Length: 176
Image 1 (spheres, rainbow, N blue to C red):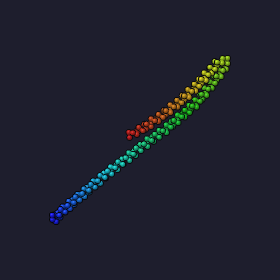
Image 2 (cartoon, rainbow, N blue to C red):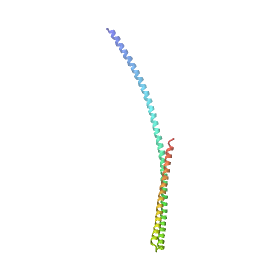
Image 3 (cartoon, rainbow, N blue to C red):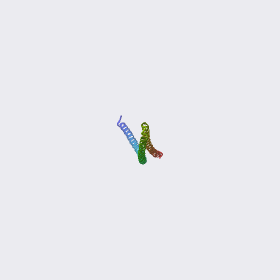
Image 4 (tube, rainbow, N blue to C red):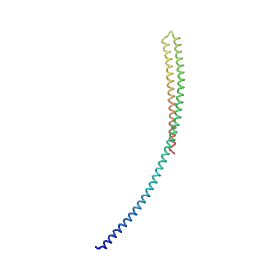
């Protein structure tokens, strides 16, 4: 092989290397352009997603604050109603004490009268006296129980209305 043949082979190898280098350079440039384009697209998508997420979180916080505000208002109103129920129960208890005192007084008067009238028949007056005391005690217990039941019923009604109002307040925000 002569020198000229080696020159041709070297020239062909150099030409092939130049073509390969040029095509690799252009491929890399195209790949870099495409990569840069897609990175830009992904960055825009990520920015849109982050903005949408922030907006949904802000809306959820606003809705939670609205609901909590309504619940707080309902709780305050329920507390006022329960305070009214307690005041009514206290007034009823005071009136009940007056009735109890009156019943005790009537029982004592009846017992005194029976003792005065039935001095000759001791067994009869004791039975009638204990009956009057028993009736007074029964009246007192029935009145106490009725007062407690009325208070419990009023409290349950106030709490039930507050619960219903809270549910309606929360439920009304779901459709928004």
